[in-house]
Every structure is written in C-alpha cells, then in structure tokens.
Image (cartoon, rainbow over all chains, first blue to last red; front, side, top):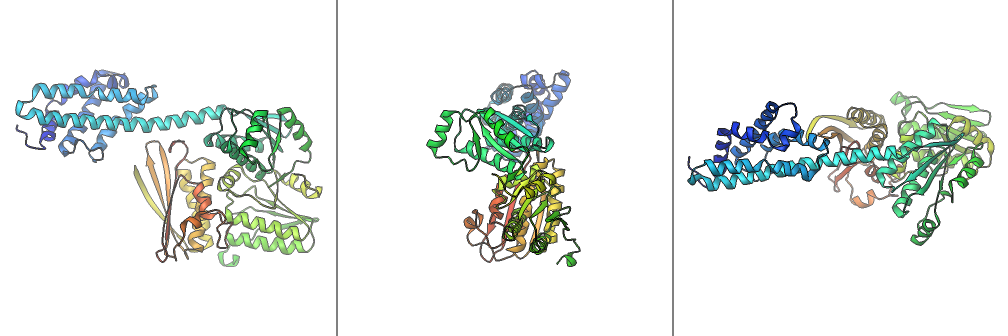
Length: 283
Length: 125
Length: 140
C-alpha cells in the first residue's frame, strides 16, 4: 500500500476497514459508549461498529476536513442519539465534546503503530483531520441539543413560576418574580388570559413587587400584557411599583400609557373591588 | 357578493334598543364588510349600542380589526356604542404581538357584561 | 433538515383566503403547534394571502412542512406576478397602508413568525416566505 499525494484519506479508509473490530472494541470501553450503552458491552461494540463504518465512508469520500460533506450524515446519525442521551444524563456540551475527543487517541495510536513508514505521514494527517471533523460534528450536535434543553427548562421554570391567584370573585392576580423577558411574558400572558376565561375575571392584577428592574423592555412587556387583558374584556392594574422603580421609570422617560398603577397589592385589590360589579373594559 | 360565494351574512338581532351580531362562522373579508353595512343601516333606525360577540372567532387580522373599528366609528356618530365581547386568549395575544388594538371599541368578557356596559351609558376607564 | 411534501393553494378570491387559513391551521396542528402558535401563523397567513390577492392581483401559496431533530415547522411561500413593491422598508413599516387593513399587514405578519423574507422588485412580482416553529424547536 503506497500513499500518493491526497492518498492519506484512502489509506485511512482502508485502515479503518481492516481494523474495524479492534477499534470498536477499544471505543466501547471509552466514556461516550460506556455511559450510553449501559445494557451491555455487546451493544456498545455494535454502536462503535456503526461509527467506524460511517467514518470509513467519509475517509473513502476523501474530504476528511470538510464538515459539510454529505458522507457525514451517517456520522451525525450515529452520534446524535448518544449525544442526546449524554445531555439528558446531565453532561454539558464541553464534557460531551471531551468524550467525543477521546475517540481520537486509539485511532492515531493504531495508525502510528501499524502503518508502514511510507504511508504513515499522510495517513496520520488524514486521520487527525478526520477525528477533528468528528469532534466538530459532535460539538455541533451537542450545542443544538443544549439549545433545545435550555429552552425547555426555561419554559418549564417560567410555567411553574407563574401562579395565577384568585383574590376575590372575578379578581385574579399574578405575582411576578424575577426578570421579565419576552419568552416569560408570553407564558405570563397565556396563563393570565386563560385564568381570566376560567374564573370569569373582570380584573387582573399584575404585581411586580418581585421584579428587580423595570426598563423600557420590561415596561413594553407589561403594556402588552395589559393590552391583551383589555382586548379580552377585563381590566388590568399593575401593582408593587417600589419607589426606586417609580423613579427609574420617570428618569428613563418610560411612558406606561394609560395602564392603571397602584403602589401595593392591597391598593390594587381595593381598586379592583371598586371595578367589580361594573366589570368593564375599554380597548 | 355573498350570493356568488354561497356564504351567509352574519345575522343581526335587535334586542330592544341594542343590536347584537354573533359571529358563528368563518369570516371572509366580504362577509365582514357586509356586516358593517348591515349594522350601520340598522343603527341608523335608532339604537343605544351594538354588541358583537366574537367568542367563536378564531383569528382577528388587520382587516377585521379595521372593519370593527369602522363599525364603532359609524355607530358612535349614530349615538350608540360598540362593545366587542368574548375574545379568545390566542386572538388577544396575536393581536398584541402584531401591534393591533381595537381603537374606539369597548370590550367585555361575556354577552351579559356587554349588555350591562351598553346599559350603563357612561363608560369608566 | 428534511422537507416534506408541498401543498399548493390558489389565492384568487377572498373565499380562497379563508381556504388558506384553514389549510395553514391544519398544517400547524399536524406539526404540533400550540393553540397560540397556530393562531399566530394562521393570522400571518391571512395577512399575507390578502396582500397577494389585493396587491399582487392574485397568486398562490406553497405550504411545506420542515423536520428538524427538535420539532417540526412550517414554511409558507406566497407568490404573485403582480407589480411588485418598490419600497419594501416602507411597506413593512407600521402605518403604511394602501387602503386595506390598518397598515399592519406585512409588518404585523413579520412579528408573528420566526423567519420572514421578501423578494420583490417593480415589474417582477412578489414572493414572501415565512417560517414558523413551535416553541422549543427554535431555541425558545
């Protein structure tokens, strides 16, 4: 077997096919395979075979340092499930990346040990490129997976953190705690509007005592919520505007429009009780 | 226009001095425009207010929002007020995201609240 | 990302705008959108279909379902061979109206979807492509 220019990849492809079993056996003992395939070593070896085969095809294709080649789809498919399992088990993307990177050492060691001198140099370069590409693909998968998990957790958290309380007949309140970003505002709005329907509420109180900061963005979110409440035919009052927040609002020149505001939740409830019975809204 | 498409107009009922339009169907633009015409003509015969029940309406886009605002403007001139009632939460959220409001219209949760609002005469803010 | 079959609908009358709303609702339900997400994309479709009918003199809509590892989205492509839009920025700004709606048609639709692209020039027709994803499939 001689290696011409650019033939390093072909040599790696031949090598991977010839050493498929040995490599799979070694990989099966590494964290990535071991942690995912806990049901038995055979399953881990089988999964490792699949990844070796997919990488063989990439090497056969020749473009070992290009993360866009179609041949990598099989590699992605082989990695995706394992990476998802690792993320679900709590491994962070850097941890997962390190576990994927571990797969490199046995490959390089075997190429260095077993290939003839004439072939070794080009093959080592190609094998290094190939395993670098594998690591990038792994990182890409774990990061996109991470994005989905973070989004899911944030959603669950904000749903849990948004209780709607029935304070009186036809009066509901949401005590907001923490920052109000747009994802959170969506959840608050949906939860509050559903509660207005369920409770036949005429007044909704948004209590922002637990909101640390009111800037223009937060003010906008509050106004959106108040407007949606009004479109639904209920009235909205914002309470819990602490003195320093009131000052910030004035200093920033934030216009709260014609949102009704009260200093405390008690004041807001008093206002709400005055409204109930007339139960009116105006768009 | 409606005869051509085979779609019904929204029926308008007179409850004493109040006109009630309950939208129970998919609204095309031409049906919305026909509703505006019907309500404006009937309001001219004497009315204290118009109630439009949109509890069955699944979307309000900028066209329907404009037609509703036009109905409010027309009935206001004819000495009545227009109340839109029963908007669904997803509709309200979508309108807010788009930046749509219902200028000149009053809103109520239920038909009962809407009637009370028309009867009340004076509207608080 | 893989794409599923494409559905094409004509937009030549206001009754067909109603048909567009129904087809987009069905696609959104099939892709697992929540009720609020369905309502947003259907409302955006209603605005864009009316734009195609009123300003483009009629056209068509292609609905494509998109599959990603974390969820399914839908892509809507509205095409017409009308006069095109000379000033896209103005057409997208609030308050711009040519007599239909509140001047929030295009700009409003843009706020209801995750991706929005418009390809137009005077005399060349207009193609508006929007993509909507359910929460979680597109980073929240």
